[in-house]
Length: 204
Image (tube, rainbow, N blue to C red; front, side, top):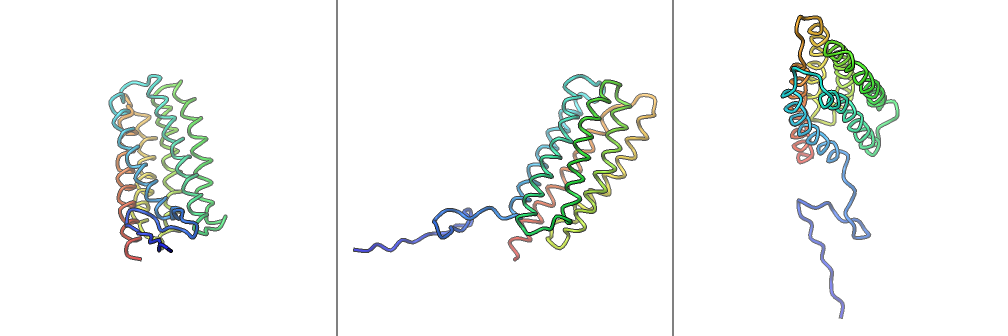
C-alpha cells in the first residue's frame, strides 16, 4: 500500500525544497530582520546612554564603542544578503566603506573617551556625517528594491546631526544626550524600512 505524502505550506514557514528541508531565507527577509534588530538595539542603547549622558564613565565609553561595532556587524550581514540577491562587488562598495569607517570610529571613540566628552562628540560627529553619506548612497542605489526611502532620509538626517555634534563639542558644558538621541530616529527609520520591505514582498 502506497501512502501519498502531502506537504502543507503555511504563511509562517518557508517553502520546502526537493530534499524536504526549508528553503533558505530570502535576502529581503534577512534585511527585514536586520532592520528590526537595529530598531530594537537603537532604542535600548539610547535609553541606557541617555541615563548617563552627563558623565563619561567606563560603561558609557564601552557603549559608545559598541554602537559602531554593531554597525559593522549589520553591514556584514547586509552585504551577505545583497550578494545572495546577486549584487555585484561594485554595488557593495558603500557597505565595505561603512565597515572600514565604523571600525576606525570604534577605535577613535575609545581613544577619545580618555580625553573627555568634547573629543568624543567630535569623533561621533565625524562618523555620523560619513556614515550618513554612505547610507544615503547605498539606499539610493537600492531604491528599486523598495523600502529605502526612510533610509535615504535617515542618511541625510545623520549627516546634519553629525555636523551639530561637532559644533556642540565647543560649547561650555557639552553632554552626550545628543549622541544618545541620535540613535532614536535612526532606529525608527529602520523600523519603517522593515515594514515597507515586508509590504513590498507581499505585493510581489
